Length: 113
Length: 115
Image (tube, each protein chain N blue to C red):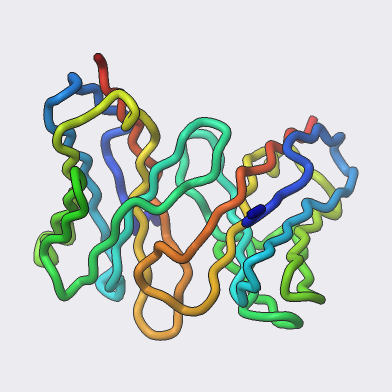
């Protein structure tokens, strides 16, 4: 029972173009969504997050969009750079005092020079 | 500035053996977590702790045990290793409940193979 789904295992884009990574969720109790980036042989590092009361959050080249009615969020990277090549995990947190993360399977982004 | 330190980084175990994955953080964080990541899968929570002396099960606790005798340390114990426990294990910590996510720090991972 996957509550956070990343249906694209991989994505390849050209340097300078936009990368769009998608994530769907099923649990209506999730009220905070996060993106983590992971390089090989390293632990995940936090990238950007969004509260369920917002529909957009921007940080430099990274923007996360949330569509609550569709239970869908996306991460946009503009412009994409070769150093962005990594696995990107979508994660969600539930309501109340539960601060545990539920992760998707991840999407491998490759940015080609 | 060590952050979250996990040892060992790599280990091969035989079926039925036991071992402990060590995790230490030097940030005085209250919350600590153990996740496992199977190939092609997301991270799944094994156990977590909200402070010294307090632990609780996550999504996939079977086959594991934890203890939290100090704020800094959160070891994960595998009592009878099984091939299904072949995975990459990540320890993480955070200071206090923070919904932003940017206060959760992960270690570099421990690669465990059970043969």
